[in-house]
Length: 316
Image 1 (cartoon, rainbow, N blue to C red):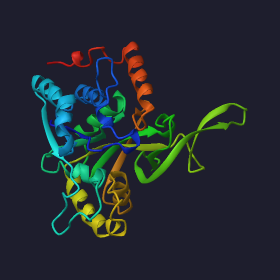
Image 2: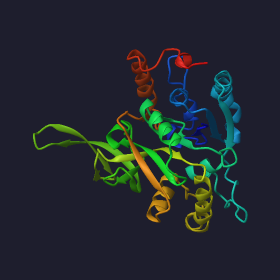
Image 3: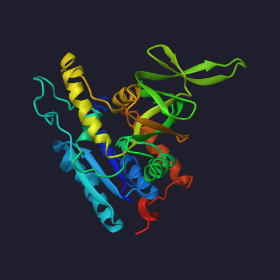
Image 4: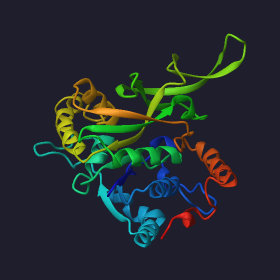
């Protein structure tokens, strides 16, 4: 069965200091975070890759990773394709507002691949390391998806996803007793805190703008499993977004996948199974995160989670 990994790699990463953070080397031999995600996806059984990038970074992207991964995937009989996110890529009747420079967010990024996807697919961020467990769980779900509007997501534990170097934005999830998502609250500026328990021990905590947040909450890290039918829903939602939120805030409004999923859930149009993962997320949100990420990969190699030659354990 064909299953696709869609990697959203169009973001510039303004908080990272102006560089293209998705292309920063963090591995022993210059690997970037995407290399590890691609390895884990191929190992789990995904057999098609789609990179969503911008035209202005295409040349550098292909030099750093695209050409190399295409060569590997040819040997593995895995298809590779590209979608291109652009500010002006809008439905008929709409045009980009004067003064806006950034594309429209993760919802538009996924839509950049709408003509390339005809099978169940997983969506991830390019600059996030997710761990192996979630790739396998989502792949297995997609191979046995119950119906066209039954989706899934990797449920990370909030305290396993925070940065030591500043606030982050997370989709905090509400989950029912059967493990299905009921709502997603996009929450910004979440930072690590320390709490004193009843026994006097110091525990990891979290807060958003001074408001305590349950550190054991499930959060969305933009790691979703969808059927191809999701694209039609996403197109409909984009039109609604452009007619409403984008008109209210034309220069900064973003069409975000977790926010739209929350709306679909409230309207009863889809279900989303939360697949728990205990793996620790890490990523390069801030420039200072890079050293921690590089050291984390070194430790994963030392512990035998990955080979020093990353892709050598894939069957050709």
